[in-house]
Length: 138
Image (cartoon, rainbow, N blue to C red; front, side):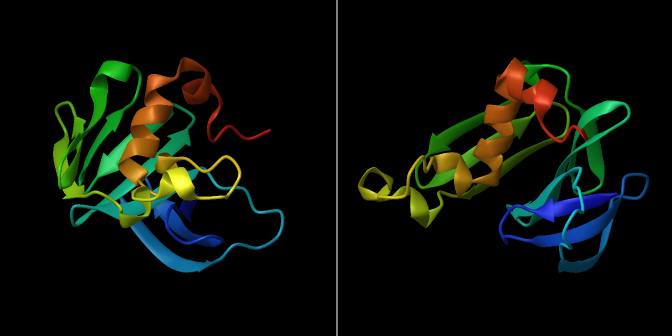
């Protein structure tokens, strides 16, 4: 399964959901479709992906199927962000420096979730429309 890096544009890796292993990082080739995103939060590898069973979130060696917004919560507890995933993990990581000054950013449609993988995950899970649409192959 091909998964895109959240932090580096056009970087992908192979992901094995059975083992949780990411391997063979490389540039995405034209026409390749990805099934999710991966990144690092609080020193843990996090993979947010969709397979035939639905939407999943893997943190290190623990995984859960995302079928309820109540499973994932994000909050700011200066100077940290906290991503809580029921029964899986509670991740504390620094507030992304890009957040500061966003109100002055001239980039159209820029949002805080573009710089914070944890917030991105929580926002997707909170929205029934986004949860149903994300990572679906056409």
